[in-house]
Length: 182
Image (cartoon, rainbow, N blue to C red; front, side, top):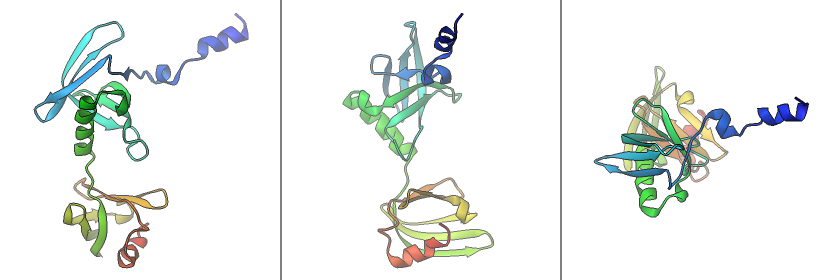
């Protein structure tokens, strides 16, 4: 066998190498099941699989929130990947988008009212698009993730997430309180 044939045999697509099954409107059907989502998936060989509950996970939650959505079963095994929510009809998009909004809900912080640190914990009182919120961080610097030059996410000790959509839009007092942790 010559070198070109060997190279052709080795060449596989990324989805083949990663064993990704892409879901499309022709192979994946989603609907509400109470407060959850159920799915009916048709495999490549035409076999129909029903899942009474599925979980959605964004592969790139900050950069591409509506693309590359992993659909997983009860055991956290990936059933398949949605390339883009826009591939699906309006009703299905709404079902999937609503579930992602619920899962990835993060109030947007608009102002830091108070920020105190003691014994390795920081205590925050902020204004957000959900009203006034108080939360606690442990290891404050590790609990704040900066994305790009102007955006940050905070995860509190209970797993709650908060977004600062624009550091530049913060008032000077709020920014001063936050600067030492960025």
